[in-house]
Image 1 (cartoon, rainbow, N blue to C red):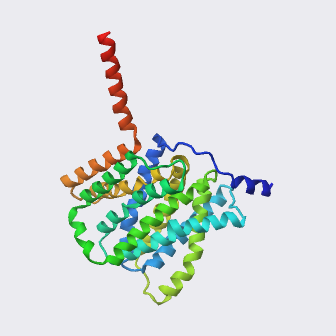
Image 2 (tube, one colour):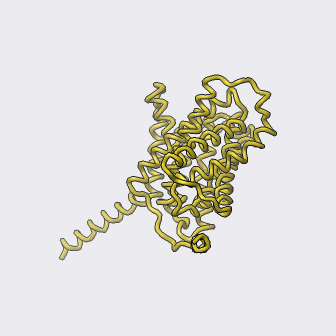
Image 3 (spheres, rainbow, N blue to C red):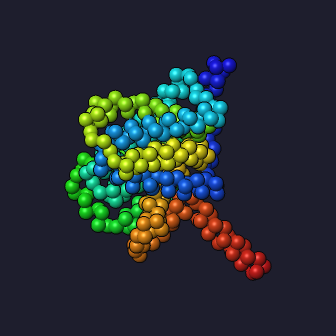
Length: 328
């Protein structure tokens, strides 16, 4: 039985269309809210804790929570070595590398600039998907949508954030490296189709937690640090339970249904979610540039999704048909 399953898992799936339905759009918005909060949580935690220790706390607590949920639901993690090698690789690409680079980058550059640089994730993902997959090819719509999305994020956060591009180049390259790693993770994660999203999320964060233990101990030496305050603890728990455990269950659900290039649209929505949370909860002011940026992002998403253009073409075809009928 195991041998048969192993052989079947190596069989390539036939290319299939990856589309965003209503459920996937709702889940994408929820994911953007969860990940939008991660920039806030990480900034609070970085006041008391070094980057690698925050990464360990984030994935360690998330792994504990997800494993407990699996036990409560009566599910079990796979035990075969091949599957755990895949979980480990996904953990490196989707957690260990990007979390570490972004958290370290935020100690050197503003979060707003980090958000803009992180918004290049869809660009990398679209290009990688074109090169490495058969069913997520680069199209004019995708390319235009990515460009519009990056422009919209830049307008919304503010062009003044780009003034920091001349300084702290290493930190900026670190955040861009995280975006590239996320792009590879989106492509690699396609192999988990057929695996329950909860199992995939649990496997990758558990593997990451195991890898982060020696990294944190060797680099940060957390036993030498002062005890973090309640705000830092709350931020780490928020990162772990909301922005990681819950977020990754949604992440793999969308990835399975809609593919990598559709999934990374969330990168454009994260700043929008963070801004809307700030205006509704923290009473922050909404400027005209925010509305302009959101409008450009919405246009980019519509272009990438393709439905808007299809509706426009369908409307033109209908009007043309009516015109021909009228002349007859």
